[in-house]
Amino acid sequence: MSATSSDAVRTGSTAGPGPGGLARALRTAVSPRGAVYLLLVVLLVAVVILNPSFAEPGQLVRYIQRVAPIALVAIGQYFVIVSGEFDLSQGSLVTTQVVLAGTLIGQDDAKAIPVLVLLLVLGTVVGIVNGIVTTYLKVPSFIVTLGMMLVLYGGVMWWTGGAATGNPADSFRQIGRGGIEGVPVIGLLPWAVLVLAAVVAVAVWLSRRPFGRTLIAIGDNPAAGVFAGASVWRTKTAAFVISSLCATTAGVLLVGYAGVHPSVGKGYEFIAITAVVLGGVVLGGGRGSVWGALAGAFALETLFTLLNFTSVPSTMRDAIQGAIIIAAVAYSGAVFRARRKRPTSGLGAIADAAAPAGPHDPASAASPAAHTPPGPTGTEPTGSIPSPDPAGDVAVRGDQMKENRS
Image (cartoon, rainbow, N blue to C red; front, side):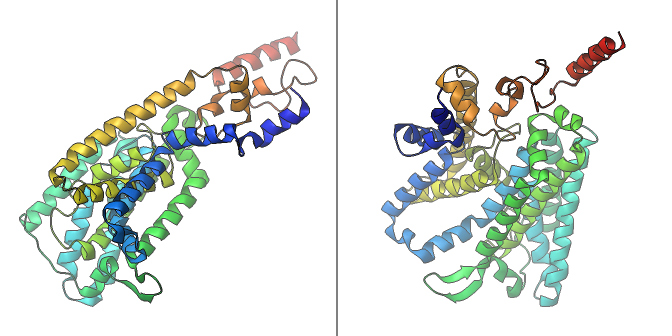
């Protein structure tokens, strides 16, 4: 290969305009991570065709306000699923927080801040309990969070008797239904949109920090994470706490948007899981992004909006969610299996060598020695990275020590 062509491969210039760049863009669009964005665009176009007023700036902002609670729960679920676990307690926690706010605040504005602090503390405690029981007692998170879901839901039903109760002060309800008025073009900028933007910013920041990379590494291979010195129990517990705090924030928004009712958060955990899977996050952990989970939440809510416009019965939502989960997981599995079977010679190998390998990219598992010239001794590549097999390293070093002694 000439120097010019090798430079082009290293700089990624083949991804520019042309058949190669177009093919790569198409592969990205239909990949498990990119398909959700394409689906979201298609669904939004379909909704606008059926209801042209949906494209007005004010309507779009209100649409984001309506999606905000679902998006918050999906972001929290992302951190748990990417670590290889599940959180089925989110929906019941949302209901618990809504009922507590409605019952404890009443019409006394002075109680709003103390009750809000109480809700955050309760959410943190639920996350810590889920995380510690899962990691220390080695109980599957599916069972732990299922039990927590039943505990919270049973407590709410016992307290309320299954009926709507409580009417929090308007100042507290404005968090979910109010906003900044008089904004040009859109008229009203809801607080829910600002809260969602802040949570997304923090979540993206966390995902790019060592915490986020460690979370993905643990979800991909917990044993390797332990060998690398990562604290699995602390990292996973933090993920459960983030999930519970996101559910708590969604509950605060729903107090103003949906009112106080014992069934207000019912099914939110399954909606969140569906959104996360639709966004390309792999069940079992190790692959995914915050943006994918967010796009999955918006795509799912847009799909339900489209179904409402086409007069599809709302009772079909559960069936559609189940079909989406099965299809998304099956599609992701088929794509990743196909990638593992790609040829490792010729142009395919060149493209794989040129592509950057992320912490959860299958290409990152390739040995760096295969792309590094031999060192001065001819036995080890210069600047090579230690082998991921600790037993192999120990054996090699033992042989070297024997040779030096002899």
